[in-house]
Image (cartoon, rainbow, N blue to C red; front, side, top):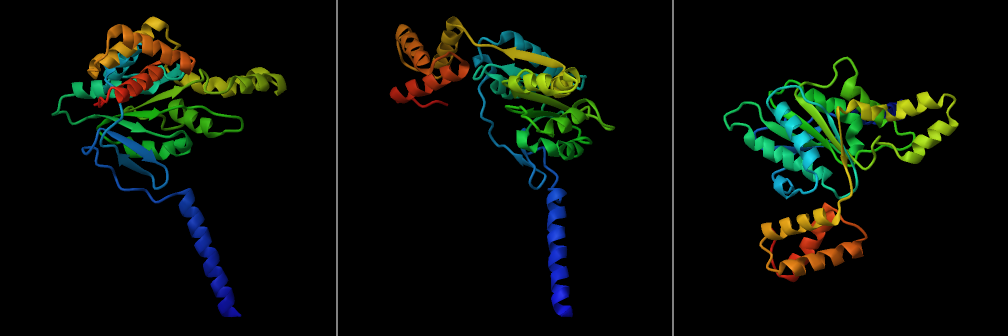
Length: 292
């Protein structure tokens, strides 16, 4: 009987130990920031995984977003040079280059940093579901000499989602606050990171509607820059198509290029940078041309 009880206790202790390890995972190895310019944060294991090649386009291929590009470029340059800079929320229409701009700007500004500099500009992607572990990531970065842009793509929150409180505390609150060598760039289709129906529901059901809504949308106020991306007109769409076609040397008559591009946008039901790139991929395939 004593042996059975001992076995049960051992099994119970193992289950408790496993649960504690899941709640507070063993820290992963310290990253070698000299090995890559971009990383992905993995909450499971608390580790940074190097990205050898980032999927990006050149900054001069991004058309129709000149104003927001220049604002974010200036902000990124200041940050890379060690000066104060703002967190940025890139919001608006799908496919208009929000995430492409962040990756392109990082590459452009990183190239401006002298090769002999001890502090590099490093891009770290954190997935939406890993936001609760953001504090642990910052603890790894706080004492580093490098400058870090944390990039969260397609950031948004739904009803009863408490993760936004963790992000809000890191951005502008808490005892430690955001490290001076860390900046957050996030993209979202929602200006306030919450669905409109959720905000309206809070107004109609809360005892104090104003306070309830303020709590939900105050997260977006933690971003010093709000940069809007709006649907493009036909001229901008054609400029995108021409830019891609020229860059990749696609042999096609200019008028025929635009005719096919227009037909492609009609079948897709809209125009955007993503639609332009998808058309170029289709065209390159039909022309038996490889895209670099």
